[in-house]
Image (cartoon, rainbow, N blue to C red; front, top):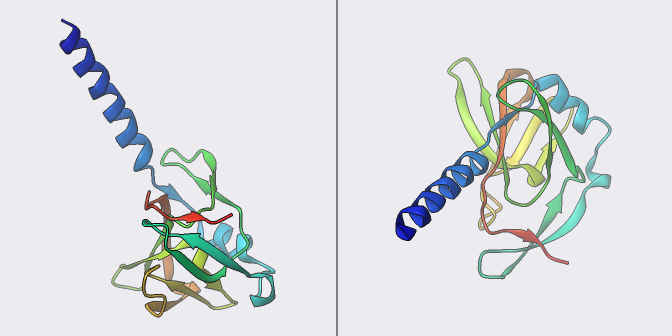
Length: 148
């Protein structure tokens, strides 16, 4: 009987973890633009991030600490920025997708440039803001943390 209860508890915890860990939020394009309005390269800072094996990574990061977004039911939500937050853009006439690390995206009047890999920061891509049709954001739960 005790094993049956433990199995039930383990199953319940697993379901909660899976549903919480895979939450994808939406950011309307205009809200995304507004959150980056007024940011230029002088406001970006030098971040130190501890990787999965505590190896350090150094890069410039945007200063946004809280990301305003919406859950799947349209309710407002705030996502706290971290090195594991991933943002996915759907863009173009063919609905192409690209995923970047949120803390390493750079936005100007017409483009978004992002880094696709913490390990190889030269893997970048630039897309036009006007071509974006959907923005999704989630915590990828990768083992990256800001070093103190």
